[in-house]
Amino acid sequence: IRHPWEGAARVVADYAGIPVINAGDGGHEHPTQTLCDLYTIKKERQTIKGLRIALSGDLKYGRTIHSLSYALARFGATILFHPYPGLEMPEHVLRKLTTRYKGELKRYEALGNVSKKGLFPIDAVYMTPSSPHQLAMIPDISMQIELEKEVDALYVTRLQKERQAKMGKQGANKDYVVVNKELLKKKKFKRTLVMHPLPRVDELAYEVDGDPRSMYFKQAARGVPVRMALLALLLGTKEVVVSREDDYSFVRQMDYPVYRRDSGLRCSNPKCVTNQE
Image (tube, rainbow, N blue to C red; front, side):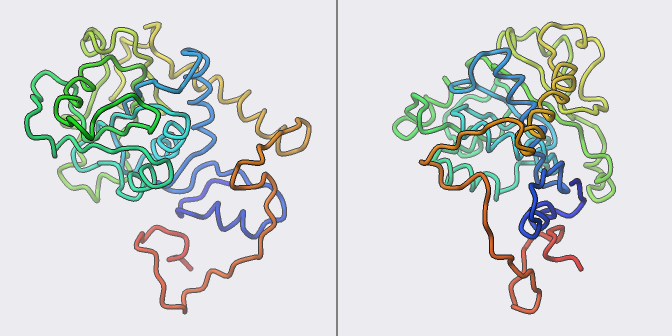
C-alpha cells in the first residue's frame, strides 16, 4: 500500500488478516526502497557494518532517508547527516536512532574547537555502539578525525517539489547539493558509491551517470528482484528462519486496536493518519 497519510500502512497492517507491504506512507518511511539500498551496498561493499554513509539533501521529507537511517544503524554503519538548510532530519528519527539502536549522536553545531573549513558540511554524525570511537572522551578531536575520513556511500535525495510552496523562498533550489564531477574529485569521495532513490531533479549531474561509482540505475534495476523476493517470502514460497532472540514474531497475532479521536490524545504530526477522518 502507498498512501499520503503517514502511518496509514501501519493501520492497515493492524487490521488486515494478511501481510501488508508498506510502499511509502507520506513523508514517513519507504521500507522496500531501503531493501534495495541495503542490497546495493552489500553487493558492492560486501558488508554494511563499519561503513560510513552520508545522507544528503531533503532529510526532513525524504521518506527513503528515514527508513534507511534505521536500517544502517541496525547493521552497524556510521551515518553522516548533510541536510539542505531547514530540511534537517526530524527529531523523532534521531531520537529513535539513539534510544532503540543505542548509538551516539554528535551534533556538529555543538562542537567548539573543531575547524570546519574544508570539511564536508554536515549537521550531525551517528555512530553505532560497535564503532571504535572516543567521542565521549575527546569529542572535538575525535570528530575532526571522523569528518576527514573517506565516505563509503553518498545517498542523495531530491528537494520535494510538492512542498516548496510551504517552504517559501527556501523552496528554491539555491545552494541545494549537486553531485557532479567536481565534487567526486575530492579525496573523500574517491571510492564513494553515489546512490539516489530516483526520480531526480537537479541534484545529480548527468555527467556522472557513466561514472563507475554511480549506483542509482543499479538500485532501480535491483528493485525488481528484491521486491520479488519479498513477495515470495510473504507468499510462503521461501522459508524464513527468525531468531528466537528477536523481540518480534514474523507473523503477529494482534488484538485489533481502535483508532479513536475521543480519548483526548493527539499525534503532534498533522499528517499522521490518526489526525485524519
